[in-house]
Structures are given as structure tokens and as C-alpha cells.
Image (cartoon, rainbow, N blue to C red):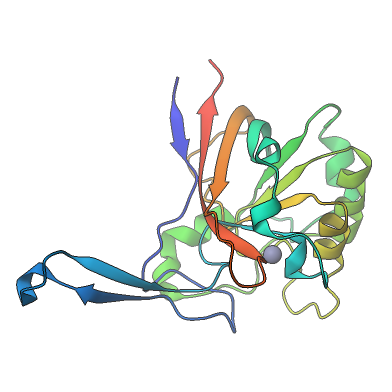
Length: 214
Ligand SMILES: [Zn+2]
């Protein structure tokens, strides 16, 4: 059984969504400075790298990442290939994908290639999920929706319809996947967020893997 790591590395040069906190690692204690151990202090936002969004991200009083059901985060998932010339995934793409019975959907788009040149910084021309696609996924009863860049939303949106449609129904949004090395098809997804209980619980980084079913 093959395990595919579909998470991005978190380091100082990992692209972050504009306006989010910078990623910083501080050597809090260091053996070479005479401290008894190496201890790193982490400084970054809850939506850094590969991460989940909880309802509390956009909905006042929405449930937090701590309350996220583990059953949504582990289980069968389908990777859908979206052609490179598609800037927005719409309900037509969902209709064409025959997703009956699929509970977790991960969209592999041209965005995955962006991670290869990530030192060049954030790209705002990423392929996103149109609200018509989000509504269709709700209709289908999907529990988790993943995409291979830092947001499911069209860049520059001020009303965030795609997030709202999904989060209002408690659907987990998984963002920042790197699906470069994964073929379209069916897998088992395991993506477990840090068990953060502080803050507003809006999201948390995850280590996401796909296991081949063969
Ligand atoms: Zn998001």
C-alpha cells in the first residue's frame, strides 16, 4: 500500500495568504548556546500550508476545529483532475465528474504546480471553487472538499460565498494540498488537524496523506 504525502512543507518561504501572519521559526533554546535542549518556537497563522477551515472561520459562533468530527477527516476520497485551462471549478465540472456516493473530493488543478516555485511567493491567479460547484457538492452530501492552493474562494472576493456555502453545512474545507504526484482516482484520505483549543478555532494545519487502495 502506497502512502502519498499531499501536504506542503512549512518554512519561512512557504507562500501565505496575503494579510496572514508571517511564518517564523525562532530558536527558543539551543544546545549550542548551552541550553539543555533544542526547542523551536513556532509563529504562523492557523491557515498556514496544508490546513482545514472550520465553520468558525467565516461564521460568527460557528463550530471550531476542535469540534471537527474525525470521521469527516479520515476515509475514502476521490481526486478529480481539473484541466489546466480552467480558472473556476463550476457545477458543470461537478456534474461531469459523476460523484454519486463520493464523500470526500479533492480537486487537482494547475495550482499544484505553483508549489514547485513557491519561493516566488503567493499566486493570486489560482483556480478556485465557484459557488455553483459548492452548492452542487452540498446537494451530493459531500463531507469534505479539498483544493490544491491556499483558498477555495476566488481571489479578491469580499463576500466569500464558497466558504459560506460549505461551512454553513459543516463541510470540512481542506486547503493547501499538493497533488502534483497523485493521479486522479480513489484513495483513503487521512488529514488530522492539530488539536488546537485556543483562539477562535477557525482552522488548523494538518498533515494530509492519501493511501492507495490497492
Ligand atoms: Zn479557506
